[in-house]
Each structure stands twice: as structure tokens, then as C-alpha cells.
Amino acid sequence: MKLDEAPVRANLLSAADQSLVDGVLAGQRRSLAKAITLIESTRADHQQRAQQVLTALLPKTGNAIRIGISGVPGAGKSTFIEALGVWLIEQGRKLAVLAIDPSSSVTGGSILGDKTRMELLSQREEAFIRPSPSAGSLGGVAEKTREAMLLCEASGYDVIIIETVGVGQSETTVAGMVDMFCLLQLPNAGDDLQAIKKGIVEIADLVVINKADIDKQATAVVRAQWRNALHMLRPASPNWSPPVIALSALHKEGIVDFWEQVEKYQAALKPTGEFAAKRQHQSLSWMWQLIDSGLRQHFRHHPRVQENLPAFTRSVEEGHTTPAAAAYALLDYLKHQ
Image 1: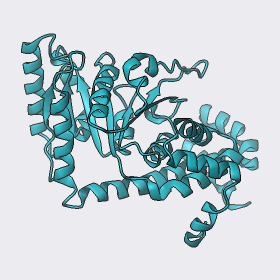
Image 2 (image 1 turned 60 degrees about the vertical axis):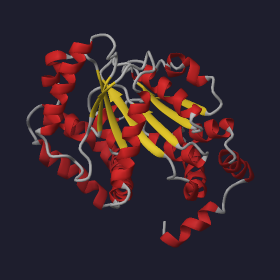
Image 3 (image 1 turned 180 degrees about the horizontal axis):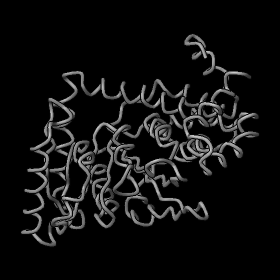
């Protein structure tokens, strides 16, 4: 698509899709849910419509603070998000939670139980909770999470929280789509800190020790460990050194302190232009990820690739052909269409 064609596409909306756009802009939760369902669809015609809807809504996006929440299983992510969300609503904000549920590798199904775990928050009109199955996506992040985030922004939600499956590749994936990445830890982690990958420590903008009420002494030890670990690394931003705070989401203690850190983070990065530059970099990275994904799909559905892939696969498995030779031969089919 040429650059000057973008406004034209936005004007090609059907009456139904224009109604959907109007509903999202009006803050109608049903319209927002339907729009997210549309972008999550794998049907080609739905994907075309979804991109037209997103293009029409794009000018109304970008006005929210995007926060990624991750941590080890049992760290209390859902409890923390609910406590934070209820407090934010009391402060006059609107909150959208995009919670990624792990999909079964056998059946492809997922529990999608986040609304159950956030019972109080799910009852608030100012909150929108959307559990989405990871469906095998890299890092446990639903493939369309980025688009869903934009739709929520267009619908007037000024705080977007993305909750991930757990510790692993998901941290890197989520950190690449949010403004601030927060890692939840437990006070009784002890020496488990040594098992946490350096890469995860490097991308954390804020470390939160939850359930601090359980063992205050253990909390102090883990907090000191994290501070030392972060001190030994060069901060990802020259304008921000990741703090380590302790709180108890269950008892609603430390929530205000957490949000103060979020506001300090924005105050530190926005005046320097780093905040905006980070989003620009994420958008370009997102574009290239989609290109890579599209090329992979195009390759796999190429007739000659499908015809010859089994033979090359067997040849590599049996040691008759090197993986590189097989890959180059298969890729060569794309040159002769």
C-alpha cells in the first residue's frame, strides 16, 4: 500500500464497520469487544476489515500509559492488577486489562479465567478485561495483543495493562510493546534470584516484591538482592534507574507508591523525547515482525515448497543434505514464481 492510500482505505468502511468504529470511539464496551474479536479472526476477509477499522481509529490512539505486568506463577499478578485497577478507577481513570492465557499445546484450548480472578474489577464499568488465548504465539503473548491495545486506547481507556503468562520469553515480547515493564516477585524467592536470566533483569523498569506482608525480613533480603543485581547492570535508559518496591496487593498496601513510580518514570522520559522515541522504535519493530511472519506464511504456502518440503525434510533428517543447503534450495523457489 502506498502512503497516500492510507486515508482512502479508512473511507472504504462498510456501514457495519463504520458503526463499529463509532461505537469504539463512543466507549461502548460491546463494540470494543466485537472489534477485538474481528482483529483476532484468522479469516482473510476479516483481517482486511480489521485493518480498515484500525486505520480509521489510529488518530485516536496513543494517549494511554501502557504497562506490562509479569512474574513467576503465584506472584499474585491478578490480585495486584485488581487492587491497582480499583484504585485507579477511584482516581477517575479508565483501565483496560489484556490478560494472556496459556493455550494447551494438545487441544489448543485455554481457561480464560482472568475475569474470575479479578471479580471486583470485572464488575466496574470503567474497567475492560479481555482474556485472550496465547494460541501458541511466541512468548505467550497473543498475536493480536498490540492491535487490541490500540483499540482500547481509541475507546478512551487511559491505562492499558498487559498481563503475561509467566517468566520466560514473554517478558521480552511484552517489553517490546509497552511503555513500562514491571516484574512481580515473591518475598520468599531466596536464592531463586540467581536463576533469573540476566536479560529479564535488564528489561525491568520496575521490580515489585508482592506479598510483602507474609515475611518482612525475607522481603528486605530479596529487595536488597534485586537492588544489587540492578546496580551491577547498565540501565536500559540513561534517564531512569529501575527502583525496587515492596507492597501487599491483598491488603491494598503500597498501591499508591507503585503508581508514583509510574508517574516518575513518565516524568523522567517524556521531556527528553525518549518516551516517544521508544514507541516509534516499537512500531517499526512491530512492522518488521509482521513482515517476517507474512513471509514465513507465504513461504509455507508456496506450491513448490509444499511439493518438495517433505523430500528435503527427509534428506536433512537422514544426513544426506545439510540444513543450509536444503533451506537455500527451498528459498530459491520463491525467486521463480
